[in-house]
Image 1 (tube, rainbow, N blue to C red):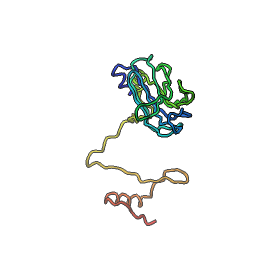
Image 2 (image 1 turned 180 degrees about the horizontal axis):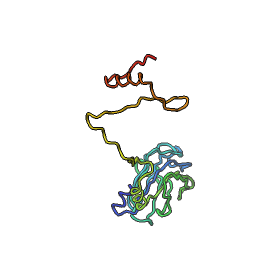
Image 3 (image 1 turned 135 degrees about the vertical axis):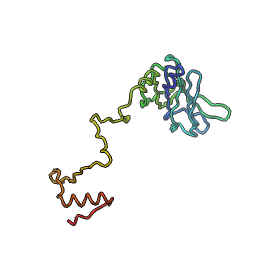
Image 4 (image 1 turned 90 degrees about the horizontal axis):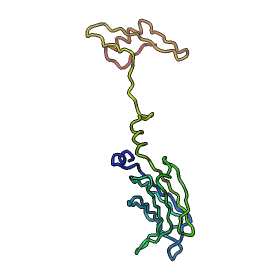
Length: 203
C-alpha cells in the first residue's frame, strides 16, 4: 500500500486499528452505550462496527489504511455512541502523523479527551513511501533464489556409446562405501536393463 501511495504522490500510508475500549462513559438510560470508533485524516473517514450495550468493547475488525499527503496531517480518533437519531460523542484523540511509530505491532492505550473517563487501545503506524520503495527493491532474505552450480556439467553420452555403472551401498555402521560383489552387480545390471522395479539377490 505504501508503494502505491508513493506512485500517487503521497508521502506514505497510515495504518490504524482500533482494538478495545475501557471504562467508557454511559450514554444510554440503561447505563450502557453502543460504541463505535471513527477515524478521520485529511478529510477521509473510516469507522468500526457498533458494539451494542458495552462500556468495555472489543473490536475484531482489521485495520484501516489511509494514503497521507503530509507529515503534518493530524489523525482524529473519535468514540461515539450509536443512536437512531444521531451519534453522541464519547471522547476524542488526536495524533500527528510525524509522531507515529514507523513499525506495526505497537499497541498503545490512551485516555479519551473531553469526557470524564474512558480509554482506547489502538495500533497506529505510519509507513513512509520511501521506506516501502527501498524494501521492494531489496530482495528478501527468505525469498527463494535460483541456485547455479558453478561446476562444469557433464554432457550426456552419445547414443550407442557404453555407459559404466558402479553398484555400491553405504555401511550404516561405519559410513564407508562398499562395492557389491561381481555376481550381485551382474544381477542388478540385468534387472535394470529389463526395467524391473526390484530384484531378489538370494541373500
